[in-house]
Every structure is written in structure tokens, then in C-alpha cells.
Amino acid sequence: MSRPSILAGLAAGAGAAGAGAAAVAVAARRRWQVAPDPTGGRPLELPALEELEVTAADGTRLAAAVCGPSEGPLVVLAHGWTADRRTWGPVARRLVGSGHRVVVWDQRGHGRSGLGPDGASIGALAGDVAAVLDVLDARGAVLAGHSMGGMAVLAFAATHPETLAERVGHLLLVATAARSPLPGSPGGWYERLALATVEHPLLLALSGHELTRAFVARQGFGADPPLAALMAASVPMAAGARGDFLRSMARFDLRAELGALSVPATVLHGTEDRVIRTELGRELAAALAGSSLEILSGAGHQLPFERPDRVAAVVRAASFGPLPGGGR
Image (cartoon, rainbow, N blue to C red):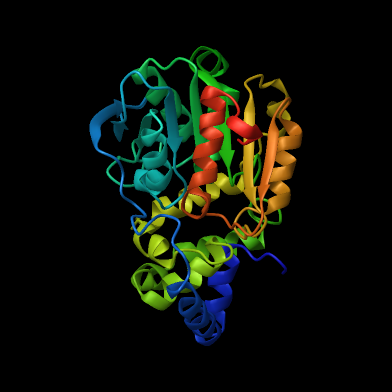
């Protein structure tokens, strides 16, 4: 496969008794140890923040935080699968520096947020997005989602159109898709293989090993990524929740609903994304009326780490208009 997913890469490494994976990881580690780090050595550091507790519709407590000036343009950032709110750190620091008010939270089942009775599904995450916006009494916010967080944002937009119109001025969809990133049909062999991989006790036991993380970094990042960022960004999760979120993503398909969305949107995707293929980003942008698409050469899946300047610039453009000189 020319663009194997992160899950296929893990399964292939396990199937080869780890020898091939270890060889790739060692070579990758040597290269990335000397690669420039666009996070400035602070991959997960958030600006000074105020904790905010959000209660979801099913009563789940969501751990959220607000940083930046209270009068600044509001930006709400949803993180991806097996991550937490800190993965937006490089972007959040840049936005607070330009006067934005930034809100981040741990998705349910991640970080310090509970899983709740509605469980691990994109539908539940969509309701959580609405709850966060309601607590903030948001108006004209830039709402951004990375990977699974982007799917949550899309599902929110499709299922809460009144809240979307009242509270959101622009959608930023980062390395995400409107349908399953897994090849094959729902419930098919590829999904079964992926679930067996992510729920396997050996994967959880080895998740902290340097070679394992380096191999995963090879799948998640593009050219010359900061290895330290991924080393710090992997969030321990129960195998059941990890698998249930993957099942929900494997059945996710909002293509039919996208044409009805009227809020302006920007889609960002990397040419070297091996987790959610670049063509899915193109497909998403084509289905959203009036959206813009930017493909970032050499970037992989982890755009908040790999291209924080560019992601922040797109948010600023959505908040304030185009940057001087025609930049965005």
C-alpha cells in the first residue's frame, strides 16, 4: 500500500515479529533526533489557563480550559483520537500571542474527561461540542477539529444546525474526513484487523517503548517531524474505549449531509498523511459549499505539531481577515 494507515503499519510490524518495525523505527529515530522541532521543544505546553468544567447532555464531566484575553476572538479546538487537549499547545500559544481567547477540552474518554453513559461514539462527541459552545455562550467562534475531533465538529454541524448558526462563524477542519478513514466496508476484514491491533494487550504494554513510538511516529508524521512531540503526545486509554471510538469512526459517513452546511469552512491536509489519506481531505472540501482547501506539502497527519504557524495563521485569517501581503 502506498499510504498505509497507522493501524496497518502497526499490524504489519507485529506480523513480522517486530523486526521490520524496529529497523524502520531505528532509522526514523536517527533522522528525527536531528530534525528541527517546530514546537520549540514545548510540544504539549499550553498558555496560562483557567480550568472550566463542562457538563455534557448525558451528565458526563468534560475537563476544559480557557486561555487568552477574555475580549479576544474566540477559538474552540477539538483534539483527535488517543490524544488530549494539550496536543493543541503549539497552536494555542501562537493564537494567545495574537490576542485570541482559546478554549480546549479533553474529549470524553480521553485525558481527565469521563466516558459517560453515551459512550465512545462520534455522535456523543458531537453533543459535547454543542455543550462546550453553550457554556461559553459563543458567538462567531472559529471551531477547529483535528482528525477525530474534525469528525466530531462535522457531526455537530450536521446534527445541531441552530447551535452552529448561532455560535460558529468559521469551521477549520484539520487532517480529517467526512467518512471512515479505513478502507473496505464497515465490519470488514480491515476493520477487524484494526480493532484486534488497537485492543491487543501487547500494544498497550509496549506503547511506552521508544521503538514502538518511533514506528508510530513514522506513520503519523510527514517529513522531518519532531519525535519528542509524539513521544509526549500519546495518551493512555483503556483498550475498550480506544476500540469503540475506532468502531464509530469506521462507520462514520456524513457526505450526504455536508451540502446543507452554510458556515464558511477551511480544510487543511498534508500531502504525507498516512492516517487519513489526502484524497479524503480533497473530497471533504469538494462537498462543503464555499469551503477552501489548502494542501501542505511534506506534512503528515499531526499538523498541530508539524505546521503550528500555518494552522494559527488560518485561524487568524478566519478571525481578522487575510494577513498583510495576501498571506493567510
